[in-house]
Length: 297
Image (cartoon, rainbow, N blue to C red):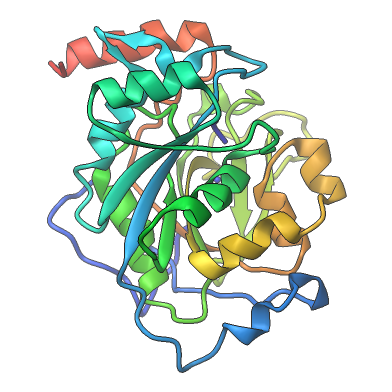
């Protein structure tokens, strides 16, 4: 469930919170012929995308941490903590959980969350969001894929990527990164990102990128960590499952690479956020210790 710059921008947002800040210009991309009709909905006459839904994909059968959404973090299931944080985002009109598991559905309903049941065949969170949006009664212009294993996600980051996408009528995708800690440089569970000078994502990897010839991480280089949270134009999200899996996506097991390999460009913002994702059972104790330090209940 987890999975990623900085330069000047004419479309920088400004919010009261110092937790999130946009540092790149809005960028957009149109896929090549494989995009299956994408050009039909891209163009300068598109209306402002005001209706936004946040979807938290959650599956029980994770290969790295089975039952992760239901793990208790200081007395609450992790999925509940993520949902509560997402509800604080001012740009979201609605927040739902998308799952294929009855235990997760019952848990979410117990604390008041709306739940959409999706297929077990979904390969990743993006496909689960794509299926869920088709089952929602209301229509939305933007879908935010909120990683369920980031129980301390800042609502300002959610608002940041939404506003970045709203400000670019021809963009179809936005995501966020933050500074990578040196101790996480070689951790394959911490996805890294590199971008060009215009703020387009060049690549995402579980390995350290860029990688120098010394074979060691450079303490002076500003490596970037992908936070996993992503927002999509709804019409783009609907064609995403039709795009065929790509070699880089399959090798790295990163869904963002299918988007890049099919010719789309991504808007990326850098935010000031200390990532606290839960990828393994050992991460739970770290999260709880941090929450105690910060007096978070």
